[in-house]
Image (tube, rainbow, N blue to C red; front, side, top):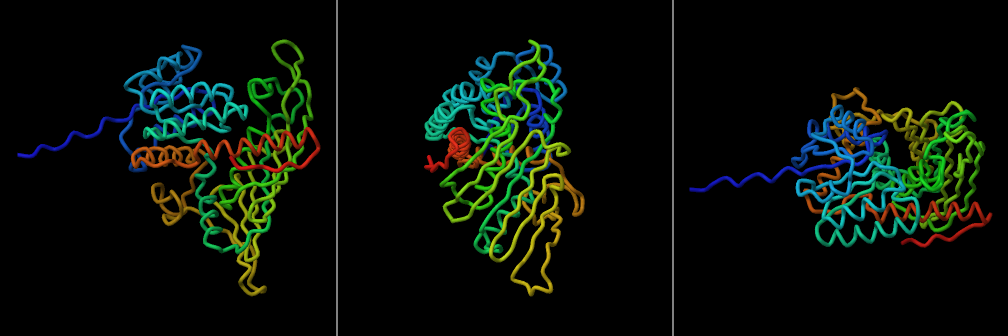
Length: 383
């Protein structure tokens, strides 16, 4: 008489950090299994430094318990996945320790605050991968269905040879000179300002959409408000408010990247334009269910940008959600991210973007910073 095999033990998940990104990631963990077929998992523990605040967050976000010591949590036998939503200056220490403890790791972007830390993390990820332990960096905009569709159209040759790309990520939460100091405005905790925070997204999109690599960088950084009110009175801002970069790509295409946290009136606007010999694509995060497409192979009298409403079941990720015409939002990108991560763990494959891809972006960010400081153009060697 045969006996049914026991179902695999659910994967235990620990998330570290419960603020902005911790809330976004928690929402994804709480909802992903309702819409996608993923391996069984349990939201075991949410970790934060303030015991009362993290306990309250854990109860609200669907975690079974809370803790204040991440070091103890990552050694637990019931924890299989560590999701790092803590600030960048903590990424390297937590990620390396978790990988060495045999835990699959998802970490928010940018990979780390310094190249040296990013390289340590990537080396630890490669070593862990040999033991079947997976890792991924959270560039969630890869999971916007319209941008995933844009990548497919480019790969299919619908734009022909891509000549140039414009990517602008603009926010205004620091436009007011009296906006208070935060950890994001200090180099020792944030690493950089708009450069690492949002240029990392814009640069990753250029690489993701084109399947290309950066060979040369020219950059400029600027801090428009050098001092802000803080706990110790007026404090010095030690990171950039805005950044600009021109990127040369292996294919011969040129990308222009502009990011700002002082762009008055822009709340969270990621605009991407891709221009090819046979067509062009337009995207704006503030209308994330739409993709503009111009087919230049049509007769001139028929040409013009047409609006693709990206919410059909045939579009990336959307078959799991609502009937056609019902739009999805920013938070869904994190649900798609968790879905892809869990699927890769189940299949034993390397999820993308890998730590290596995150390190590549880190090298480009570092080159932008160095170019800005030296007023020079730098050659970027892929690592």
